[in-house]
Image (tube, rainbow, N blue to C red; front, side, top):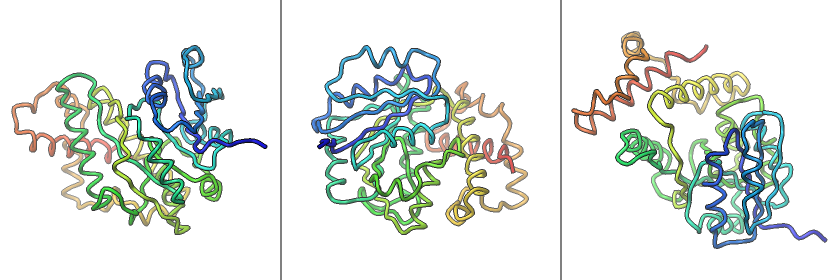
Length: 300
């Protein structure tokens, strides 16, 4: 008789040799020990496999290599190899305290089908402007999701960098949609809502996420995400009901967005042009410029 671990932790990685030890190191320090880790190397050409296999860990570790399939395909591959009835998905660039898996195990024992934690920004360097802006965004997003630190969500949301999905629920939903190169977690959340499967947000289950290096990189990442949501709308028409970012804009707002959507504005942010302004005003300007940059580059 095979003894299954309580939790299977799935960590997808692509070219992650320089960052994956953040996540694996935090897993090594967990107070709860009944878990396995599955690292899925998704078409990497760096030395991730060598680094991981040469390290010493107290937890069972499986390293799986495959041709590049994107985040959805990598997570699905890890889930297929998992032994536990509760799947934990974590990104490869996280840090977290020793209670994370203990908290997830408690939620699994309580029978929650899907649970998602929160994230905070880890600065690239001390007093980094983008770090403070990322914290502002995190607070803004989380306040829009739920009123309490632990609450069943009223609209679909899932951050696959830090979540729990019960295996039977994962299989019922068909896993992550590997036709998508991004927004696959939102797609799964929509599928869950369509089947009346509750998603619990527990903001006390926190991970530190190592940031994009600058505003320019983050702006490009936003464009990728917005385009993925457009693709999702085509693949899953039900998702349109839950999307709020692509609302119809007035002609005046459309013209204004085009005026401030040039790459040069993002470059000026990275150069610190707006640092003379009060922080609250700066962050509102950053938010506006990033929104203009991304929505005017969505492929329709």
